[in-house]
Length: 435
Image (cartoon, rainbow, N blue to C red; front, side, top):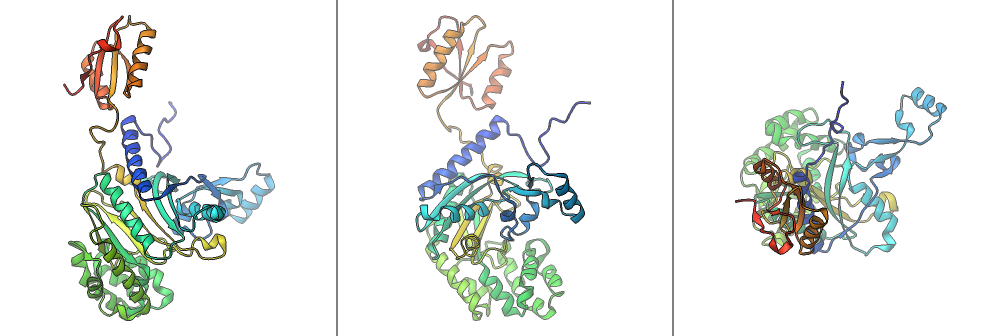
């Protein structure tokens, strides 16, 4: 029986056309981010096991791939078996996101970096997900982060840069949903939920789009029935707007959506932050990208401390980006808090939504040669065309030329030329493959 030839579950091979689309997307995103003053960095794919399980990554820590220690001795195996804890045998792990490596990078190189550091990281990460459509065990994240800026300027720069990257990719109709964790906690407190139940309550609120306001209230009754009814009334009132054009990111619209919540000091600070963000972004976003307030946006990572974002697109059933402010995270390494905020484009989902532009580089030429053409002539012709800026491939003539031309057209070649023995480069007749 033949051995399996598929890649490991949850991981993928990419054919040339797929790879070309991915490289196009990478180039567009990097170009936009660099134009906004961000600098690209690179971190190892492996981090210390203890760092990956320090409580910074939320539920993603449970999905970390661990790496066994080298030279494990029998007594170590026996001790791990007796303890029922195989993780005793690991000292490293594959990164499950780019935020934990970034905070470690910043702590390591802070003295070499500017006071406000704007970072680009676009690289693969690994999670032991249950493979399914849209969820992979290896995938690319495309992150930008601002570290060292406590003010709202960081959020403004992230939203404007991300929105322009999405527009440059041709993703029309993107909606950037915005909220603030302080608004969420303030709303829960205003409705009467005890502080020690807030995290549990937010997990339920996050299900609004799946189970509706009534379903959320039913689950929240297990925590506090009266508080559940009060927040249910708020959710029911905003549900129609969220299902339609959304809620404008303005002070009046936010306060109207959350009547009475502004009386809570924490919520008031969050509302002020969101209102100022809305004012700054008014007229600053490219055509086809809008920003809206969403009081039900939670984001699952517990390290978020302020503004949070998520990007929706009509062509995707899941978000195509997200992020937020995580001011306490870098301090876990430095011993002092450093303000930080990041925004990540869901690269794999975005790639599925875009197409390569018709002209994405120099002309791609296939030289279809006869069997009697000397190799030296082929090399000379190819060298000359490459020097002129073309992409060139040599293809031996086949009986079924129609199939050959269809294949090279599907592979991104735009023209071809028949090559006969003794013909120079000036004698080549480039013919478009679309004919």
